[in-house]
Length: 196
Image (spheres, rainbow, N blue to C red):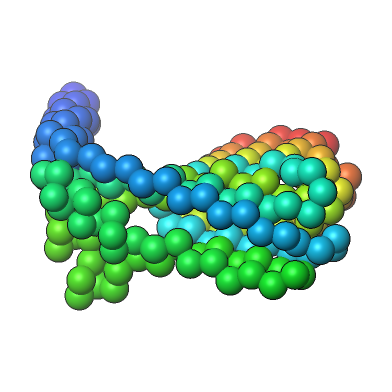
């Protein structure tokens, strides 16, 4: 009985803390960045993110399109806007490789000092056959690019890959679903694994 009461109290406290956090972070701001590149056949695309989802789909020809939707929540509008300015989408490109990295401020000038939370959701279009290396901390990854070699590493989020020629996928907290030709490695510490 005592355990049940303790459990109910903990659940109520958790719900209250989530409600308080949502109330405190009531202001929001969004910013959309879009870039287009050319990638030679057999090229590679890498993306490193912290908070936010990654979706990669097939494009026509040699075109790569990267859309980053930055979202910030803070106690007021000015802090939400300031948080958006501190998070950068850095892109390095060459004819054979594109590297995208989400840069967050260091601890000294961090988002917590602003009382803000920021995520960046990516929607990417790459040519079929592109080698993909995707990583994230908090967010899901969804890939539908035929004939591609896909490597995904996520800490908290699910992974879904369709049509790849080779898959390597790991997550700690999340499920993995796949329909691919070959598997190098697939592992989830806390989540289901389903696929063919």
